[in-house]
Length: 485
Ligand code: BG6
Image (cartoon, rainbow, N blue to C red; front, top):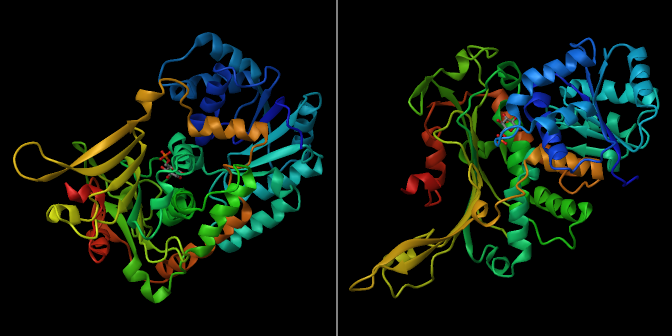
């Protein structure tokens, strides 16, 4: 595969929400930072705009607002627009793909096809690209969700696999591109300090939370057919779990890292359908208040069925059946319209075996590592220290690593990093087919059970989800981090 950096980046779904909010802003940032080869072109593909002029107007009107918190650099913006070409394309028309091929004819370098479309279009687009020979010297990027369950994801992977080799397929999970997730790898494998403690002998439990304040926004229709288990757990949460729990890879090359993640996914203790009530909680938000503003119930959101049984919250207890982690509960949680926007990993270490210093040293969680992925990236190590003054009274203190204090520059958004990785042919942060299959296999009993019976438990928007999620942890003598204060 070609590794030089000249490229043509073809964006299917060029006027879609994802292109507007994430992909085009990320490409602009990479351009502004001088990280894109000067000759690289972007060809947006859509049905709605007639010509390049119309598309650029759309970009000016819709994309600018999502670019850079630090304001826009007008010179960089106009030179960015010069990179963009436009092809109006109707997926049903074979001749439109000939038009696309002609537009790419004289452009050098790697071809990247980014499918920012619904998964039902992945196969037709790949087949149409192959019919005009555009699958050669090409990389294809598939957005999530890739399928709806194991069977449909296999069907897509099989069909795409007939046209593109696995090494050409970039299945994106934007959580893997987040700086703190990279930092977790650095923390674990760049420091000898944590690794000896990173195991069942020293770790009592681990929590991974991705909480959102946002509801389903304009995606009610999509979300109502998807739910939190498919939208967040099958991909983002299980990927985070696999990075937290994996063995040190032999190297950082793509297959070494992905092999180790796969081992974790394959070692997840299968869920017995009879136990689902004990290890999985689903919820759906009702009306409530977030930061002083009233928000409506999920079932009244546009595009959502009024009697919807789709979950907007999931909490799970997961176990990993290997020597490092046997018996350590991993609690995963995600939800929409929760009390705060936060993504974090909490590693609770075991208490000392005997305390000569009073009972607080015996409290679980006295030593704890909190890795905050967002909104502000920090790693915090909690310890006990003596309170000043008379007597030996212990109090919790923490060592703080705030990355934005250490590194003032160079922070990169997840999409920017991942798009550069595609252009440069780096696969490590993309999900391999076998990982995806293992993740679908693991969630499927829960999907099936939830589809067959019962309804999600209600929770008020602006809270931390149904009480059952707290009760699940209480059975293990622990609680979610925010419940401690
Ligand atoms: C997406 C989900 O993959 O991730 C969305 O489809 C969710 O529902 C989003 O809101 C969360 O991503 P982030 O980066 O904002 O935490």
